[in-house]
Image 1 (cartoon, rainbow, N blue to C red):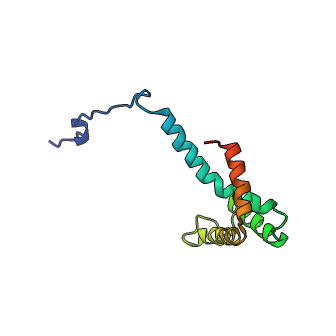
Image 2 (cartoon, rainbow, N blue to C red):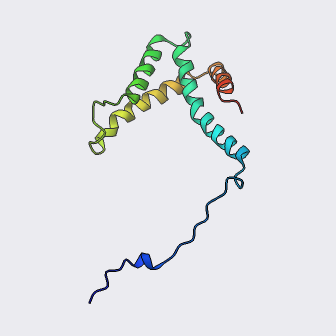
Image 3 (tube, rainbow, N blue to C red):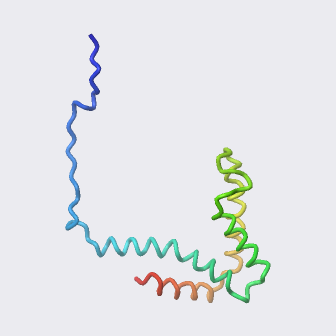
Length: 122
């Protein structure tokens, strides 16, 4: 006669749920704000590059096209294709990073920081 019992059902596990009074909401809020700011900072810098009239139009249009391509649901090479599926996204991302790093200025960073402080205050 075989034993068909699940061995894990023989054990009892105790778990504790953290009470909301244990979590310091102030610290949690700071962590979440910091995470949001970390993600938003480069996005706002890219936006400032796109709208800054001192940046050459060709650079702004190329960056806009690459950013648009990255957020579009359709790809030239579908992401389901192993390895090659993400290669087109990598090319677009490389273009954005290259243009961003070549054209970012302290003034653009400052404008982005001011927007960030207004939109997500510390």
